[in-house]
Image 1 (cartoon, rainbow, N blue to C red):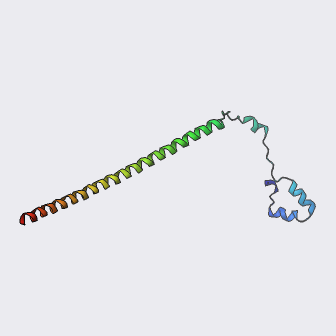
Image 2: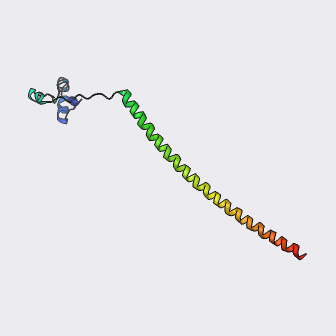
Image 3: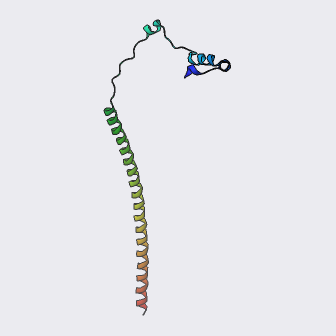
Length: 119
């Protein structure tokens, strides 16, 4: 692909005649070569043992499941804590309401007892 890129000057010459256009397009502008000296100095890369699709997939699945499970556990734990606090608050509120009703009923009974004594 890089060999077909034409500079503006080459484009002008390429469109001058059809035969030169074919020659410019087929000839590479730059060749990639390496000398024998450079190839001799190159050391081969160390051979790596492939991980394998099964082991990699199993490890990824276990890691993902563990992380998702831990996230869900902490989410549920936090929701449980919040709901427990709300329930405790409601119980205390209900206890205070029952206490108020109890004192109100006591005062009514005392007033009723006083009215009966007067009669």
